[in-house]
Image (cartoon, rainbow, N blue to C red; front, top):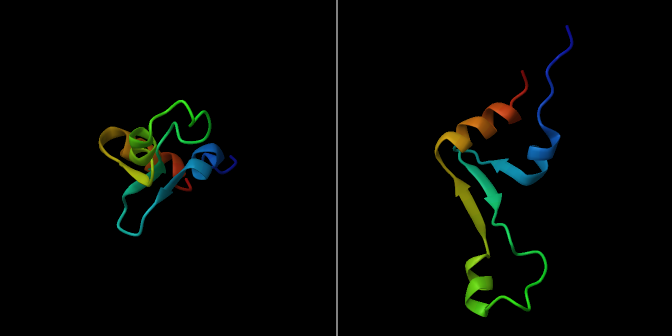
Length: 65
């Protein structure tokens, strides 16, 4: 039976920190920024820590099985 592969799509979008937290970029900050207010654009900066069931699921998808 072949080895299970990790999700390459998720690996490009999400990073697991050394302490085990799941970090991702906030959505909506790539294009069409001229129609969004400056306050909205500032709020979209930085990264987001994913919590709860999504974090558990993402970690499972990223580990080598």
